[in-house]
Image (cartoon, rainbow over all chains, first blue to last red; front, side, top):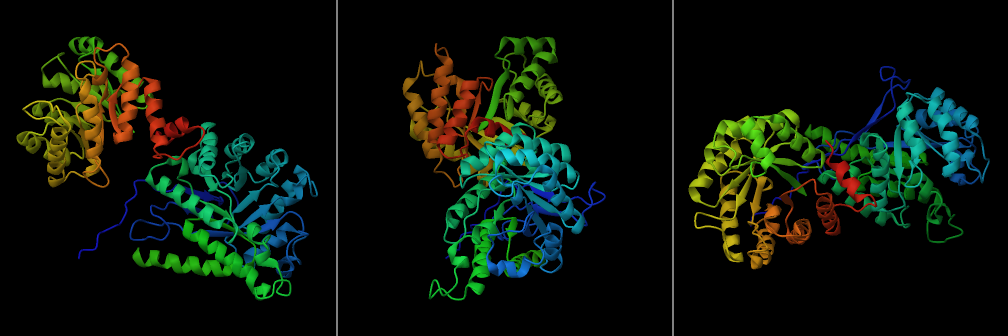
Length: 326
Length: 264
């Protein structure tokens, strides 16, 4: 019996987005990182090209976290009073591809730091490491709109990835992105329609589709992961089929989601039978990352050095087929 | 949805005059208006304005000077088609061939050679089909001939022949049924195109009839129409129908999303 050929060929490719600018590009980064460009579902090399490998950013805060599990404190507590040192450790010791600076200290319900301090944190990280940078706000729309102008300007020309814009709050960041030549993360609440809507809104006021990365929200293993997976998959199929408002690279915010679920942090004495939490936590983060890798994620934000290392190994092994073919 | 702008047609008085007077500006104005309204192709038909092939080429060149939108070469004369296809900057649609063997033998190799697409009109020298089966039979003949001669299915457009509702009322329903059967010819199915405005010929509520008929046909499988692309209600209804059929991912601004997706 003849085996039918089920190979798909896609009319459209996912946009390439380049983060970070070197001296030639008007910035000060040692190199730029390009993601996207694929013309196939994840790792189906027989269908299409995958020109760029998925990348991992490690997360750094502008304040010392008070609620991170002890397991993470072991690696970072010696540096987390200084975002510059923290970032450097992630790059030098844990081989992060790049850094995500989350401006958690600006949260009005927390330390409520101002725009000047936020911009200082951005500057510290830019000076301490040469890799490209994601700058993620505190999540409060009003406050983010207040702090981002200074942060964006401090990093002007560095082609950072700024986030996030949402359906209800996108104008300020789009304007900054255009003025200071950054890229944007478009966030939606696990909703394929709103993910598209944010992109329509942002491009309607002049943002290029090639400046957008889609963040469709992230759920940890056991916490809605398969729902996000299905959105990523359907959106990616639409993008490859020609829907330009879904033809963007995908981002997954792994660390933040994983390190708040009890399966990742509860010690064994609290939950007998679950095994050693020192192994379980990083494993939970690795597996969550691995699933999002298969869903088509291009950019990962992660916390635990061991999880970063393990996921990188998977990425290497899956990308090997690419080099073998090319 | 693939929209083919119908307006550059010698059947319209202003176009007829433009051809006779060799006045490019009228033709170019319609080329721009229709392209801006979202036409994917611009149909060019010389009608009774002239019987000279050079005049037809002149029309196509006038269009191409004004816009980048590819043209639909609307002529039933193979000699016109052959010359026109060579004058096209972007791969055109050939509108059209009938199901007659000698015509298929003549036109299809030209289409294949020039990377063009083909509209296959489901009729032959015996005339227009009066029922569902005859339409499907003629459609299948054109489709299989085209595939055999090396034209990929995504460059084949079957046209089930739209007839005026006012004079041939039962045909509208026959057409819809035939469209449905066309979708079963292959996977993915060929494109199915309507010469939409025929449905409302000489009727009073032309726009309403055009709009509703197109929406009903989209549900049956139509994905292309030669129509008045400047009729916003018509175009938006077609886009909405496709969203309802889950062909595009919904967003609150889905009309805008559709337009944004079409930008080069």
